[in-house]
Amino acid sequence: MHPSLFTIAGFRFPAYGFMVAVGYLAAIIYLHKKTPGGGLTRDNTADLIFYSAAGGILGAKAVFAVTYWKELGPDFSARLLFLFRSFPYGFVFYGGLTAGAAVFLYYCRRRGLDPLMTLDYFAPALPLAHGFGRVGCFLAGCCHGRAADGPLSVVFSDPLCEVSRAYLGVALHPVQLYEAAGNFLIFLGLHILSRKKPGSGRGLVFSAYIASYSALRFSLEFLRGDDRGGFWLGLSPAQLFSVIFGFIALGIFIRLRKNGKLKV
Figure 1: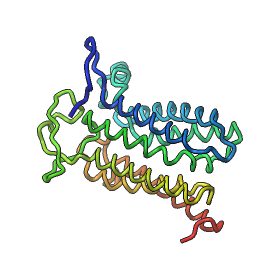
Figure 2: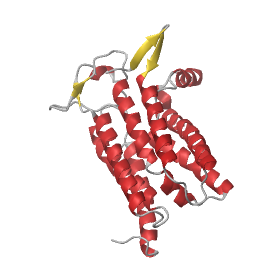
Figure 3: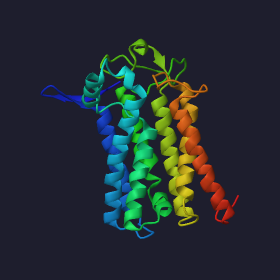
Figure 4: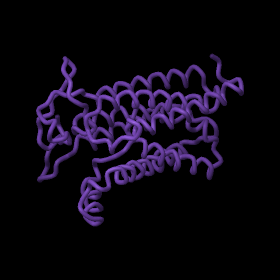
């Protein structure tokens, strides 16, 4: 597709980085228009966005490094150099979500904020930002789908894109766009849920997010054609993370049900 939007003095401006920035900005604008609750202030909100995003980026890169370590180079120095040179690419979302959540919860504890209520407030912004990020993946060619026939298939031909060499010129599932669309739908659903049931059951909106995204990611992994770090019990690492996060969401739902906060 278009891994670079334009070139200035030999520097290629990456489409992926641009779309990630757009997603980050969209999330900030969305949160700015919401009224903070549960002791949140505008300053707290800004701090949580910055620190959680920074932790998420480092966590996503760290899990990528661990997953593909042996494939990054012949020795430790070469692998480390590769990670620095390729920093704009190569991230594992669940690593970012886990690390970002850890930083988020630590900040809430230090500031005396209710963690579940705060997570509910931020939850809709996550799939909103992620959706734009997946459009960036599509433009860059990373996280691509496997071979497909049909009207929705796409062909990557730019040799600078991140598509595996064997898949250049081959019709593929635009799985990045499938996930982007799914994330935008999740955002819409969470937005409606947070407006209809404000403050109803601490953790309800966040658990709805991780449950819905886990289901989306687990399903779409079957259509992926890129290297995802091997399989265990026939499942990719992302699918295993999806199962774990799905159980976390189930645990929150059960707690809400027992407390009478969740009506089914």
